[in-house]
Amino acid sequence: MPPIWSYVDSYSSSVDEVSTSSVNRLLEVLSIPLFILYIVVLVLVFIGFTQITFHFNKKAQLQLDFLVDDDSLEPVTILRPLKGIDSNMLSCLESSFQQKYPLEKLEIIFCVQSAVDPAIPIVNTLIEKYSNVDAKLMIDQDQKSLDFFGSNPKVNNLHKGYKAAKYDILWVLDSNIYTDPHTLRRSIYTLQNNKNNGSSVPAWLRRDKTVKMVTHVPIVASNSKHRINWGSKLDEMFMSTSHAKFYVALNRIQPAPCINGKSNIYKRSDLDKSVELITRQRILKGDGLKHFAKYIGEDHMIAIAIFENVDGCAGMSRDVVLQPVSGQNSVKEYIQRRARWLRIRKYMVSAATFLEPTTESLLSGIIGSFSVNVLFKGKSSINWTWFICHMIVWFVIDAIQYEKLINVTNNNVSSVIVPRKFHLGQFARFWALREFLALPIWVISMCGTDIQWRGQPFKILPDLSAEPL
Image (tube, rainbow, N blue to C red; front, side, top):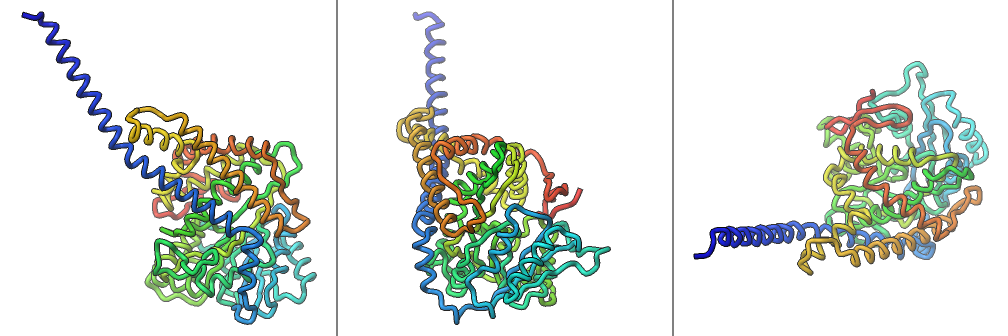
């Protein structure tokens, strides 16, 4: 009779085999959704990259320009909220006066709250210089009690211009944004003809939607002459690589609104109607914007209102808008800005924000190389060859996209704003730093609710509104 321990050893081996088999089956099951997520991210990267490559260039913009008939263009009011002095502010504000748009169909309103705001002399200089343009500066009438409708200072400032606008179509444009002279023509053509990047299919996933908002891809250009300006270089890198391709891809597919508030066009009547449907109350003409003063992310909430209540979607006009950044700007400041942005988005688009790390090159590569190894090679480890190839391809895509966006902005930019140049070594350094910082910034963002915005601390509440601290 065999010794008792031989039975014990045999039983232990069987248990180990069953245990290993169970773990492998569990890994296979878990790897399926991970692999699907990886493929979805790659598809979004491919869509964003190809859209930018083929549609965001001078040739594609000229093709759209040829279709525009000035006589059919509808009148527009440009609204620019101001507070303090921004980098290259004169050039940025002047770009509104330089739009190649019929003057009899154009109005520009600058909004400030304080009568002693340092931006006022710049505005007055431009209004005097372009006396043939219908432009005006609006300041809160009661300086002892400035307009206040909620926590969002931008909405509080804009409301007077929104209400007083002569025309229904509004172009809400941040004070630190420079635009190409043909942007407005292409944008109104896009809005009037239900286009998205020139296509007659405005939203791939929602064929029932009509273009009722035009958005422009925001790009940052660091023209700082300081040695310590890594923060602005990281901003430039993020906006021209990761943000640009996913922003373009999501606005092409449009499963839901994906809007950055730096430059957007929509009709006041559509927004007012949306607010009436949301609040179930009759509102006076031009009072719809007040509803969004309780949100810090008013741009996203406005897009949702148009998307859900008037069957609208966003269209792109093949335009980028440029935010020049100068001065000293540290890595710490960059981290704080990104953390603030993510912390706001955590409440507004929770699912997308929680999944956002999986859209970054490093974590996406780990997910992809691991799930590929488990599902196709039966190995519960990272396929390092796949990971390295993934990173190389991602780097090349970002480098090509970055250079193309530099070219389109340099073709359209004022000579006053320093054109960007592509240097592969500098690109690689800041690209690697941005990619490595992405996950730590996301973790920091998820661990808090407070934000600093325009020097004022806020707490984001569960209903998406903001409470000043």
